Amino acid sequence: MTKTAPTPSHPASTRPDYDVIVIGSGIGGLVTATQLAAKGAKVLVLERYLIPGGSAGYFEREGYCFDVGASMIFGFGTEGTTNLLTRALDAVGMKIETIPDSCQIHYHLPQGLELKVHRDYEQFLGELGDRFPQERQGIRRFYDECWRVFNCLNVMELLSLEELGYLFRVFFQHPLACLGLVKYLPQNVGDIARRYIKDPELLKFIDMECYCWSVVPA
Image (tube, rainbow, N blue to C red):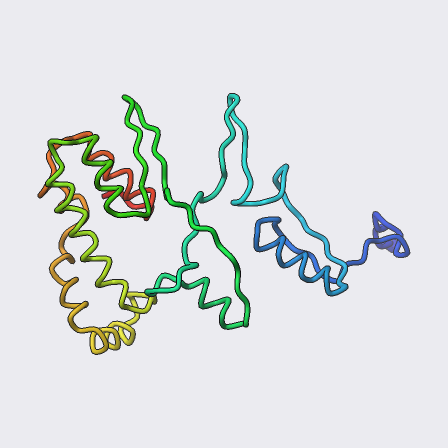
């Protein structure tokens, strides 16, 4: 008995024909699709969720609207090594106008704890010190030490710390910055915070802030 091939669900003449199929309608997928479509390509975008946007999307629950992805994007600066997006745009001869937010994160926490992480360092320390006046000196010493760590890191090119070649190159390029980081290797942020601060509510805030910035508890 001879088997016949299954009949296609669409006749060949009516089957959809696309130049490109983009999987996922996040920002990357949408930008890719629109750029290709603008150049004349026939594009199909596939998305399994109800709405497009990916991490730029949102969802609603119990009357509240929540952003899906990050509420902060950095990399558009002009100084240091954390301006990766600015440098990437410069590499292709492009620029983008950005408007910095004076408040990077606004916390609304239980027991009436409301704090803003201002871009202005002194303004942030002042507001935090007003909320925890008994820890004002410890707050200053802790965050000043965090700044010392950041300033050491900020002179180094942002690449993988697992690459030995990169580590040797960075050490010879910035020996003082590397030596400044050595003493922190066996410590974490929580160790340093507890050295200066005793208030358990403030320590919880620092732990949460670390998680917001790096997805790693203090």
